[in-house]
Image (cartoon, rainbow, N blue to C red):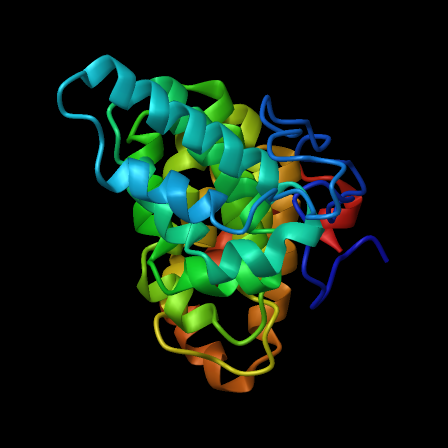
Length: 276
């Protein structure tokens, strides 16, 4: 009762403690980009996305300001298109994920914000999510957010993206190997308001039937949070440790990593649902 067990958590659903987290889905400034009434869908003409991507790859070197504006428009447009499920197949086929990854490396905060928003919405579409995963998204987001996670919009959108990625089944080992735990912990420690959201991502990595390579990184993250986390995150930690303890092959490693002491810290002063 009160304990979420082997159930993956969405970014904006009810958490183990029953409280809603994450943000309500917001509309990007480019949410209507490419819409038309000519029966061609939100993309408009078939070559529009490819043309926009080529403009990014070959900017107008004679005028850096116009080049930056073109990239900004491209990022804004892709973020808008990514919000609509009807565009998923075309985005996947025409290289939208690669384009956003390329744009995210631009040293321009406005472009980066639109890229983060695009990544957030792309991560909600399994087809685009698979393409993101092939590009080590946690590393990409660490670079985009920065160690201090200073920008509110970028940080929130990137955190939601990470949690969405952890909801995919069967790729936990790859995500953890590609620095998912580091990315979630970096954002959790840098921004208190994202602690519950990032905790969800860590919890989702425990929703498995068997151990996987590098799972000890997840264990260590829970141990490190036990003494300093908020009541909400502590409850998520306890839930995740329940999932891990259910795997017999992991129990010796849990003891070795100090989970017994960790559970004592989690129970101390915790709410009844966490102590259970």
